[in-house]
Image 1: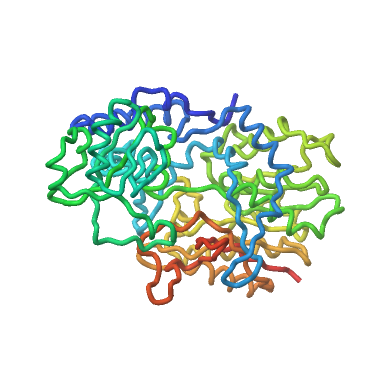
Image 2: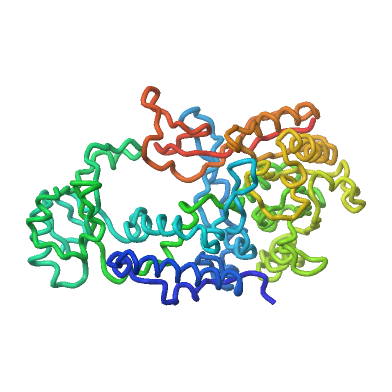
Length: 523
């Protein structure tokens, strides 16, 4: 049996995967019915075939991706933060290794809590719950009927030469539309639609190029004078705007797979995996001084979605790893005594032969998995044999109740309903075990960030550091695990010119958010 899903061709080939122009031209009633059909199709594939609304990779593509990990030059992830001049930013933009997500179709069923009521929603909820239909239609209108991510249609610029031969070139919107209707429509390759534009709202984001763009703008009076097909005016509403941009698009563009991004980015937050290649980089960096040791024991107190496990499987051939992981999530069970972690590791061992020092074992990484909370694992007799013998502790723990990974009563947010209780009942004993089980002259890496929850900012960074220093660990600084480029729009402090985000850095002229990876040393 395969414990992972493959490419979601059923959704891509289904009747709900319309062309962009089909959805653009729909009436409100037609669009509503399409949304209903889309939701029903996605839920059926998800519940009955373990196929979430993601593209995915086929088995051979997964194998090829995993094989790339062994020789991937992760040392190149180290880049300089131009704000400080320090080479402390981890800039990983690769998707290699992300296929491990396919062992966990429940990732996008993880609820994200914003309040203390434990009533957060998941992406799955937006597809499955009847009471969220109206909200879904609103979001889908924005992303598919108005193409808010610019997946299918661009914006006509002054004297734009792109797509020359299929589109007019002009610095005047009226002339552009007139020429299109007269000369270009008959080619039946491109069309356009009109998008409301607030001409008083200036771009205030980080991309300097966008600040200087000149787009073609047409007024409602000119729209009424021109012979513009009604299908081009499907988003025209003079009660909301009198000015419009021209959005050209090419025919026969399927909504999916590119449109699947909308569900992950905009509908609600979703659980993300730790990047496997970043884990590989950290393992290799912080065990370099242990090369030649018979076995390097690495402990992951919150194994999550196997991103760090996969990173451990792919470390360099000059070291033999024992990955020790624990997580109480019973959604990861495959049989009574096996989990998805076992399945990921076995798949890697079977399909990735890296050669080198440990070639006879097909992988130089062994695994030892526990289905326990990290706050109680110290009581397990098998885990006790590692006391004082760990060579590295590295994890990304829960952010209290922010992410409801499962509904298991053993989940820390279920056991400890208040943050102070969680800090003393989960965070402190987890760190106490990590430090007590760690050898001297070894490191603990802690990936955590402050989070807003229930209107309060949870001091996860400060509390983690305080507890670890109380336990005798020496703080060595932090690495900055960069995220995607910051989006535009009203996120810069007008007085300082700096981003408003709490954690940010600057790489190659770009502002980037980052998550801290705190580095502690046990003397």
